[in-house]
Image (cartoon, rainbow, N blue to C red; front, side, top):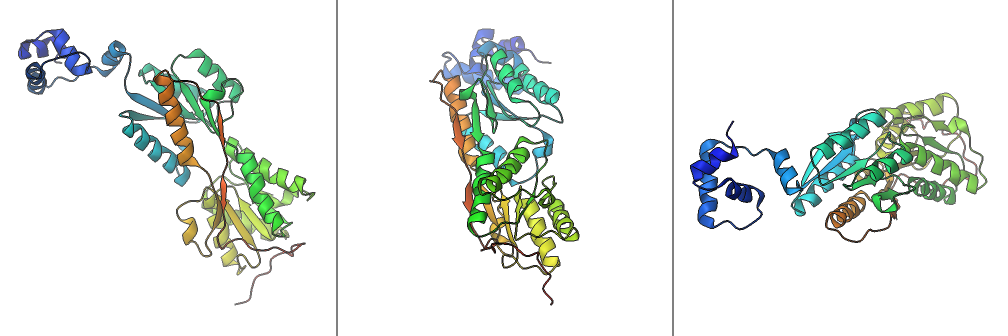
Length: 346
């Protein structure tokens, strides 16, 4: 393996000069710079990035931790795409690391990025608790920012979307349109987002003095086929419902398919509402109404706050984001007391 000393000898310069060229710090004449570049090309030298990061105390890299069960779907595609693009605009590299399947593995992923000398870390936690995140942030000097989790002790380190309040507002819109028997398809309940969206549904019904019927709450895990299965379950048990709220658009699309298979018209007989406003939503038949979460705005706030911390700027208080209901063709007026949907004869 070629060493920096061999590069220096071939270029006819000192080791210090080669180091300055590699780090970009300190003055080196253009002539000597070109000599070093030529020597690097001739020797096939590859710098030890970890050693260079230790020397310069900066790697120009930002780590992102997301568990692999969340990689699918447009929500996380948007999150990762905008993270990479915005950091590229800042002249920094994004390193994605898998948080896997437990709090300990999410914690290990954070430590892995810190061991690589990342300047900062962003995590979208699924398993780590709020207290655990607060403890991790307190233990490290490098900034660790948390997306979509409200922290108790480190307001400046979290960028939070109020999933429960957003869900409450969306269900309240259906209630305002005359719906009372509203079914709900949950996301994975080991996910904070899944739990909070369900809590928002319950809160909306309670606020409007509508009894919560457990038979109208059907478990799902974010995939379209669970939307199909949820509708089949509701129909098989003879449930009365005039609207379905799915915890994400994939399951809402599955619900649309199942309703169509039973010749149940949307929205004339059953309204359908999803979350995340996937690119496909305007193109379903009928076009899917959905709650658009401000993913891009959250990532922009996260990157700006992280760069400010790294540059020694002032700490910014926690900012809470809310979603926006995009009304399309799949929701309509509901009866004061919804009859159970009956198949339309063809």
